[in-house]
Picture 1: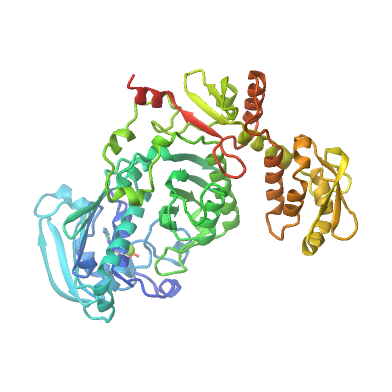
Picture 2 (picture 1 turned 135 degrees about the vertical axis):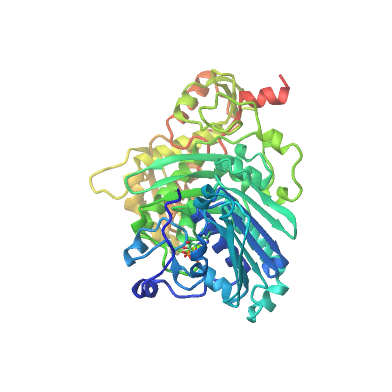
Length: 579
Ligand code: ADP
Ligand code: MG
């Protein structure tokens, strides 16, 4: 049974605590409320139909637990709900809805028909048919009974017939249809176990099979073999939160943030700080102005999430926002940092572009021969963990730039020697950087001939202030009169000879007026002292570099965000050679 409680009017004190504001601002808000009601009712299948940008008709049909006949009218009254009853419930919400206003608000500006059959009547036989009622402008006009399986259908006609907003939306029907498609896509991704179907002007615009698998749902929505471009984030649970989802690689970079889908306790939310945090995890990996495609679920104790701040319920206030933000950045950067790039032939342009013309064969490609793939979707990039890297056997060097190496099971890795070394040095410097600590002196290498660098006036001032921090890095510098500085030592563990020629460029980074100058300096040090391309490497040197790479936290991307590893899985070879 559903475990549903009756629909009742909210007591005055609770109604007063509900954040004020208009729930139904536009056609897409009607659909949002109706879909949320269907999800709250435990639906497994939700069908949405729209005509005329939603102004002529919106119909949402579900197979949820339904509404008893004697509660239909109450469901459409203001501040009536089955979801909360006392003030304390606001801080322990387990449903998407709780305000008890949506049906009333929709009914006030349209002709609304509510047809429902509660799940429990199905045991009683056909004579207990579904009941329906129609309200126009909020007034009851008709009611009756008809046959139907359990569940609810809400039909909204002539939306905004009695308000000026109608005119505005009549002109923008196409825009509104776009918003509706986007909304359905989000719910379909957030609830992969529910079958969604959207028809626009009688054409199917979206359909999912409700298999429960997010990657499959994404592939259905975008018509792409996305598994290859998605990195799964397995359930990460701490005392305070649980995270899980999928993050797209850079081949999936998009022009807007529309495809970053963040859910908190199952609710799609818009949160600038958390979206920023997710993107921060991609630092350096996405071209400027591009945004990732990702699905991230955050589960938090309900009392730490305040949803009651905006009528649309898409903004939330989190008690531990900063902590969650840090965790999101970390999880994204560590997953991307250990995911090798895939061969170019396995990458596709952005989903927006492709979904419009439906890639032929995309489905077939999404169904690779299953690999022993340790629980990763077939064809997905297997994270280059330390375990994988330590098993690599170097085979040869290509163009004095790329190491070829094989795994015991016969897949091939291509390793960019310069970037690999850059990553190794960068992480070494980060680990040994002591910051400003009086007694601790970072390991450094004394230059036989100190190097003089000259800076611009404003740079010289900042550089002077930062001398203690530079010392913590192993860069011993001192003022040499005017705007000149003497650099006496460089950090140990970097290629000193090679670095000497780049010290003035690095000093300029160390004098930058930016928040991330320290990191940029470490990146610069790594880049300027790393093995160059064009250097011959013997097999032992190749092996040593691979071993060093196995010891870093993000072996797949260089500090600038470019790929270090290319992975040709055994499956890929089998597929391409048609073995
Ligand atoms: P809320 O969702 O905030 O409770 P609504 O006005 O959206 O308020 O709905 C009022 C009530 O009607 C809900 O609390 C629920 O009991 C019932 N209801 C609405 N839609 C459905 C549905 N699709 N299936 C079952 N019950 C529903
Ligand atoms: Mg509701």
